[in-house]
Amino acid sequence: MYVELDKSCLSSTTTPPKEVFAYLSFFVFNKKENKYFSVQDVEVKKFTSSRTVWGVSQVLPLEKFNDPANGYILDGEEHEFGTHVKIASAPVPVDENLPFHKFTWSVRDFSLLKQGDYVSKNFQMGEKKWTLTLYPKGDSSSEGELSKYLHLAEGESLLIGELIMVRAQMQVLDPRGSNHLSGGFLESWVMTSTTSMGLPQSIPLAEIEEGYLDGEDTLNVEIESEITNAIRNDPFF
Image 1 (cartoon, helix red, strand yellow):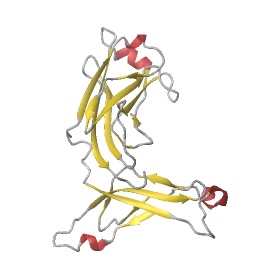
Image 2 (cartoon, helix red, strand yellow; image 1 turned 90 degrees about the vertical axis):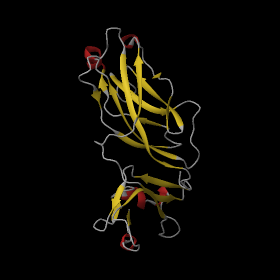
Image 3 (cartoon, one colour; image 1 turned 60 degrees about the vertical axis):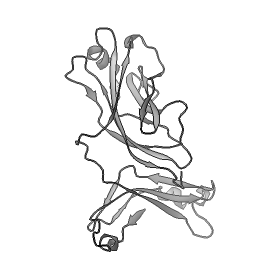
């Protein structure tokens, strides 16, 4: 599914924009479930006079889409499709210094922690409070590795149709100050159905125990994050 920008909008005013940035979502109605199946592109797309078409090459497998039992074929051979285009500001390059929210968490007695999750204190980002969750022995998807997630804090919630785009990076700090472990930046939508985001690069526990605990058995982690976009009333979420 694809959307195309009408080139005339780039030349219809006295000072036309040379570029238009937008987030794209695509929808296919499922009669059986009486709701839309949606695919959302989390990266902003740049439309220009030389690139007016953006989209996704596959929303649903063709075999699944064409099987009447799955609910995507309506009366006769009709289908119902939709798209949502959210105009965005120009993205800031990754290597540019941004006014990130920075939060540092010292996890004491790290080597003594047992299986399970450990939650940081709240910190403010935008209009809401957030927390970090660590699984020091790994979660179900990464046993034996440090797993980490950014969550909306307990008591915080999103309204129906409210979406927040968060860009974040977490580092495990080197107590010697020379070789911090970072998984790079992750950008993802947070919405009512997914109020957390996993942060990239699961780190082997053996590597942490060998070089990233200070003399008091403390692991220091730091997250840099910012809200890059927010939608208040998306009709499809």
